Image (cartoon, rainbow over all chains, first blue to last red; front, side):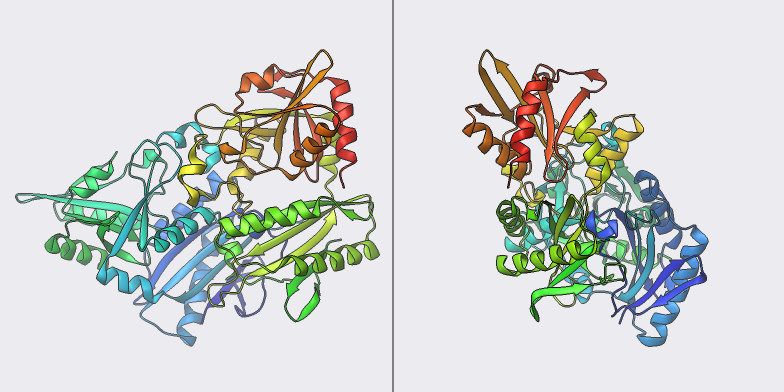
Length: 291
Length: 291
C-alpha cells in the first residue's frame, strides 16, 4: 500500500489521494520532460530520518532547476499526513517517503508536488546484509564539468533518471548488482542511487573518505550524517578526488543511501575487495543511530 | 484542445481519453524516473509527416532503453483515432502528434503508451520566419562517448529531458533563443530539440552538411528527409565532425526539427552569421514538400 498526499494550497495538511487511481496529467512536464526533482527518505520507528537534510537538498535542487516549489511548512504538513495514513493502513518496519515536485503542465505554469509513503523494497535490506558486486561505468562527463556547465544540473536530484536506470540494467545483464560511475577522466563519482564511501585503518587511526563534491556528484544526506557521526567517534575524514585504485586498496567500500543505508561492496568489475568486518560494524552502528 | 488516445490491448483503435482529467499514476516510471521514450511529429494537411521515420526511431529508442512497446499497428491505429478526434474538435493548420511510451509503474511491469495531438506552438512558426540567436553550450560529453558507454542512452529520445530544458532556459536568460550543444572536445553536436544543418555554395555546387551520428546525437528525421530531397536536387551532402568555426564560416546554419521545421540561425554567441537567402528558400521548399 502506498499513502499519497498532494501539496495543495486549498488543503493545509495536504490533500490525501488514492494511489491506485490516476492522479497526473499526461501534459505534466514531470513526465513529458522528466522536468522535476525528488527526494527519498527513510521512515522507521516513527521518524522520517534526516528530514531537514532532505528538505534542504530539495530546495537546492529546485534552485538549480529554476523550479518554484511549495514552502517547507507545506512539505512537512503533507509528510505528516502521509505517514499517518501509511501507519493506519500498513505499519511496517521500514518505509520510503518520496517527495516529488514537477514543473506541471505547460499550460498552467503551476507545478505538481506530492508525498508518497510505501514499504521499503526487500532487495535493499538483503543487499545491506550480503553486499553487492559492482561494475565501474563511465559517466561520460569529466570531473570538472559541474563548474563550467551549470545547465547540466549536476548536484540537482532531477526526475531525469533514465541514464541511472540504464546503468543499473547494464550492470545486471553483466551479472553485477550495482554501479559506481567513473568520470571520463578516471575519477570516482557516485552510484546511480547512492554515494560512495571508503575506509582505511592505520594502526588505531580510522579514516573515512568520499569523493569530493567538486566532481559534480549529488551531496549525499546519508554520507553527511555518517561523516558527522564518524567525526564524533574520532575518525579522520577525507574527500577525494579518488581513482578506482583507491577503492581497490581500501579496507572497505560502501554504497550509502537514505533507504538502503550502508551497503558493503564485495567486488569491483569482478575482483573481490577487502571487507573489514570491524569497520563495517562500527559504521553500521553509526548509520542505525541517524535520526 | 488536445486529443488523447491510450494504446490499450482492449481497444484495437486505441482508447480515447479526456486530456483535462488525470490519466497517469504517480508510480509510473515515466514520471518517477523519466524512464520512457517519445517522438513528436507534425500533422498538417491531413498527413502525419514522416510517420514511418518516427515509428522507426521510436523502435530504436525502445531497443536502446530495453523497453517493450506496442507494435507498429497499434501505434498507427491510435494515431489515426487521435488525429480524427483532433480534427473534429479543433481543426488547425499545424498540429503536433506526440507519441509517448513509459516503463509503467514498478508494480505492474506493464508500460504506458499514448498519443497526443495538440496545436503546434505559435513560437515555432515565428522563429521559422525570423530565425533565432543561438548560444553554443558544452554538453559535457566528449564526441566518442556513445560508442564506449551505451548505458548513456545516446541516440535514444528518452523522457529524461531536464538538461535539454535547462540549457534552453540558460540561453533565454542570456538573451538568446536557442542552443547548439558542443562536445567537451569541441565538436558540434545538436540542439536540445533539433538537428544542426549548415550549407555552402561553391560556384554552382551547393553542399549541405550535418554532424556525424558517431558523436552520439539523435538521428534527425527531418535532417534525413531534407538530405534525401537535397540529393535529388543535385546538392552534395556531407557529415561532420564539425567545429564551431565551420558554423561561423557557412553560408547558412539551420536548426531543423519535425514541428518547427527549418529555423535559420541568425547569430552564434552574439556574432551574426551569414544567411544566404537563396539557399534558405531552396531548403524551405524541400522541407515543405516532405510527406
